Length: 121
Image 1 (tube, helix red, strand yellow):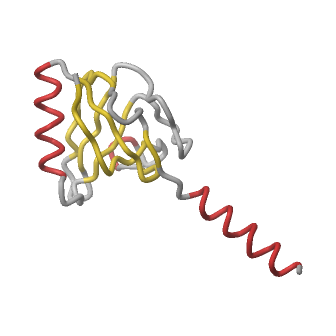
Image 2 (cartoon, rainbow, N blue to C red):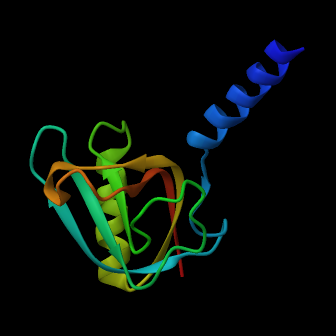
């Protein structure tokens, strides 16, 4: 019986450690303040937002910036969409798959890691 309780406890802990979810409600978004490209091979893009994200399912430290890794297959499309949205004053929405660090911020600041995004008015 103790084994089953331990197994269930470990499963619950591991699930919550790698949760995922909407940073903004589906169909809505948040304005972009600016964006930053990270130049190392493990770099990507940090998007600075004009306010905190709506939801922080992984309790990342940073709530006004999100991180998009350049290893995503759709990375170039996301970069183009973010730049176009910023230029046109449109809002963007995000889905996160956990927290991540990057070299530029010293590896101590965790950002919501973007997997999916959309552009809205």
